Image (cartoon, rainbow, N blue to C red; front, side, top):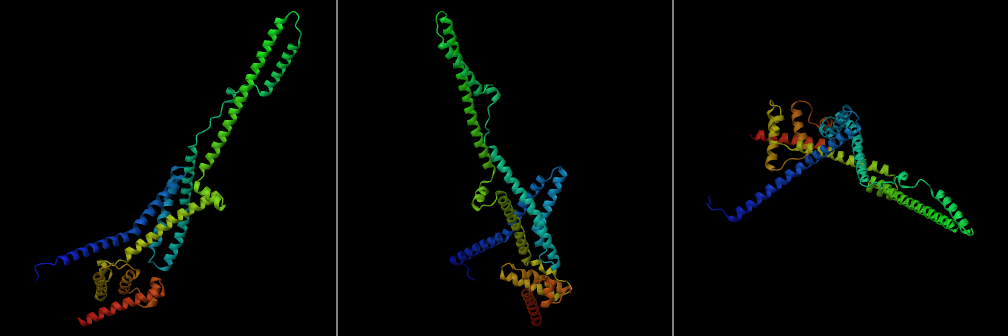
Length: 363
């Protein structure tokens, strides 16, 4: 043996090992993505369902009952199809029906949550607008109106005109004092009328500000996006809010159901080293058949991640148990699958069986 190693060969081997490790890590992360997305969607849906159930209930038992119903509906809607994907056709049809009913219940709860959240956000935005304090008319404004003040002014002017028209021969001091009193009274009435007009103008300004604040509060109470979309497409704003809440709920829950389907599909498709335990112990030929399948997968150094491997293992196990015959019609009826999938499973089963028989004959 050569005691010295080539540095280029050792460096190339290190780079290859590092790249293989990186690819393995990326492959593992990619295989975990459906599970992570499924957990995120399910936890989010459970939280919104619990909050909507709490909002719909009045007393404490009613709230807990609504929460339990919402949680059960969310779990059934997210997991039922993934759990029943390998079951017979009748079970899958029943699961699909229950999934549809659970989907309707979950949509009701999620839409309640989204609409209430939008309403609460609008209330908080509207409360940020300051209130316009109206004046106390009883304390601030005079008791008399401008009409009464004008009538008094007219009377004083008449009396003042009559006093000025009177000819003074002897008692002129009394006439001058009367004119001064009437003039002062007329000035007081004029001042009172100006004060009333000032308060009325202030009241009008406050009314305008209050009306403006009310319009601003109403505009902030509505969602800004749906308000502009409603004006753009001509649809009623309440209907548009309902449709948007329906879309948000459908995206969240359908994503959870699909990701759980993908997560269960990946977990069942990988053939592990413990697959030989599914074969009946009293049939060594089938045990060798599964072992050879496992060794072929190990030599390839890649995880077998398709649905046929999981069904092939189940086919080997059930044929060994005598539950079905390894024919195309028998496989198609047993797995409730398409004709093409049944043909492929049948070909793989018989190919492995023939390979095992040839190895046994050579041994």
